[in-house]
Length: 255
Length: 316
Image: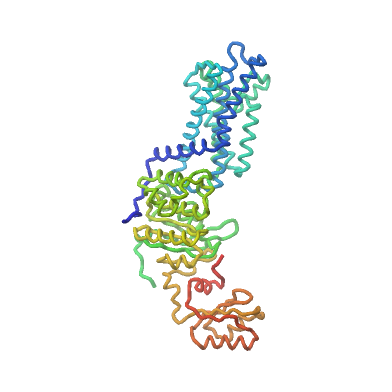
């Protein structure tokens, strides 16, 4: 029986992109450290922040419960952890292990690989939002989200952080990427205006809002709390996305 | 002089290829062709420029000088048209560390329009037992076989395999060789690099021997090893040769022979295969106080061909 008779051909591009996205999302969710970053840390920040805040009678905004202000910031944190830290680490090791080189000789074009990666990020982020939102509702979260504001915050935030993550993964070795991506994540978590609103930073808030983390946090809060669209913060994210894309395009090596 | 080949029968043509890294010339005006439907081996020691040549055919590298065509296409400019039609087996790596073997193979299959049945393929390559094993826990040989499976799962017209059996046990090597034979029987062109002469002799219809980036010989295994009246004499002695021995021996034996010292105690003589040459070698040993441990006369193999052409051994 003849089995190997040539019959070459690429699968339709959407099918390839979908296959790539499924594969990457599965690998991301299978990896313990990535899962810690994606779900466990945000949930701890959420539960810890809300319970400690209530215990201390802390109030960020006197007109509504703490959980309403806190949850959008934690969702923003989750988006940042996936599209920046997880993506940078995964891509760094893909370069190291020759995965990107291998895929480079498959029918999947570079644009398809990039699209697959972005789609995988969005799938994982959707799962993160479901989990974090579920926990937040147990804590009494009553969101009034605006679909446009939240949707644009996720898309622009993903674009900004993913382009910066690819930049880091493209210029550093895999281990250095691992260290740098985690360090930047921690610094932005602590002082980047992502979880806590800018009002909590006092005068420094004027600087923090120009960071991609501050802009994403604000855009998410405006989208979830007021149902509005934070055009100015979305603009800041767009600028970061352009900066990240230009840096990546100039420096990234697929191998 | 071999019969001219119709250009449309060529799967690969490399013409005057030059590739440099920093100040090192990796490929130096290399020209070679691969006829469709054959197994063609590119044989040479490590660092000869085999992988660079292959990666230029695969479109990973742009020729610095010269031209490369694969299935009539430019591998860089017409990469998107070419890629679905070729299969590539890289030298090591190429999979996520946490991906399961079958998951990886299925993924590559999904990128193609008419892939092979992955269960059949993994069975054929003896990967059935490790289908659920994460890539990082596969043995070197299993990783090699998975890489080969990924190269052919898309049913390509031509496969490029870089050192396909490096690190494999003898059983896996035989399985791999049988599979490559079968690919050829079904009309797939196979281009492989190797530094194992037995692999090239066993598999290839055509062998290109390259050294230091240049083609030094081409032909079928038979054409290359058919030395006519020539043969190889190997001389191994008990104590290191006195200095200048190869030159002295060469003078004794005359201009028809070539003497190459392999190490302190062994050398190879290529030349007329007759009793008189053997007698002269014995006499030379006696006259120079050298005690032979073994003196053997043998048919040339590819190793000898390489040795004769370069004055060096093929082994890495």
